[in-house]
Image (cartoon, rainbow, N blue to C red; front, side):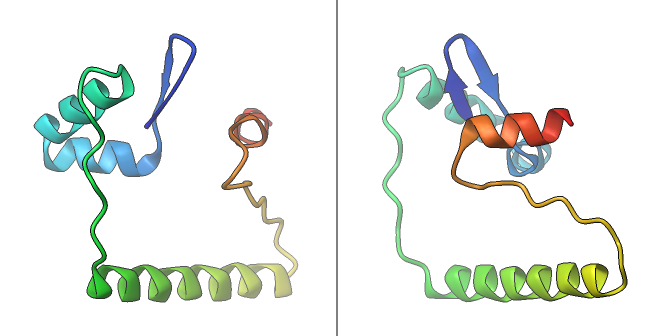
Length: 89
């Protein structure tokens, strides 16, 4: 979840979290509006391993699609402006 100006931008993860716990989404909104402090991030070896495994699977699957001649659009994870423009296309 990110706030740009007066807009709140949601990711697929934000929507997934909302389905699991609307209170967590309320807290995220409070953080986005500057009403609550962002909670500290904790190192979680199991979570990191799961994320790495998921990223590896995604990279391999995208390579499979590209090798099959499919069109794949990659979204820049670091530039909010680039992500918005890619999604609009």
